[in-house]
Image (tube, rainbow, N blue to C red):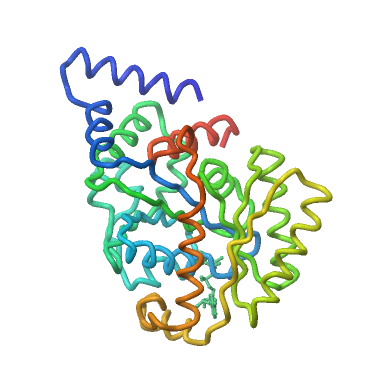
Length: 307
Ligand SMILES: Nc1ncnc2c1ncn2[C@@H]1O[C@H](COP(=O)(O)OP(=O)(O)OP(=O)(O)O)[C@@H](O)[C@H]1O
Ligand SMILES: [Mg+2]
């Protein structure tokens, strides 16, 4: 951790000596334009295919409809990603930034409702192996982003690989997506157990997807709470459930989020309620309150863990 911050301090000193405006000026600029800190939410699951990307794609658009500036970090190297769901073809990813070809603003692509997407792509592996100078460049790139975001949603891969774990450990909120499939419940438990023991993450948000009725969602919540209360020192906040809707398939085929395609549908109502639940969560003003802080934590964790 020390080396990340030391190198940032060194860069600051260098800039002061050379009279260049830098991180502090950028932060002052963003602070005045933006009274509230950014909320960083990582959307994750133990088992794959439970609807993480669907949740991210739809709550991002719901939040944008409420006037929030939203950035999605697409940290899933799998197939049906945010770009597919939104019908986008990003030209660049973080890899291009680290190789010095483009700035961070050029990597961002715009999705429905003005939602911005940062495709991590193959650059994801590189983030955890940056040298001190690259880390400084990365932080400065973040400072130089044109927009300041109210919410950052991270679409992670499933499971407990190190990469996913670091994203979850660094985020302000961890939103676990599960279904009533017993394997999904067991894997959600394993994920929360690892994060609580290894990274002292104690609070989790839960959404149960692809349910036939509200009772099915509640049942998953109760099962998870029962074992968590017995064996772990964590709290699980139930945000609600999303019904099964066969039009999700159509949404994928038409590459448009269902909240846009069917704004009056039941599933849209569920995503909007989930959005409200997330936005109503208290914001920790002291910690983890910005995109920069999030990435600094991510880099510090991955470095400490020796990835
Ligand atoms: N509420 C729902 N009703 C019906 N189908 C759904 C629902 N939510 C998601 N799906 C469908 O389930 C499939 C998996 O969803 P999605 O890709 O979002 O999962 P994921 O957790 O991101 O998967 P991965 O772990 O591979 O990244 C998709 O075909 C999606 O359209
Ligand atoms: Mg996905």
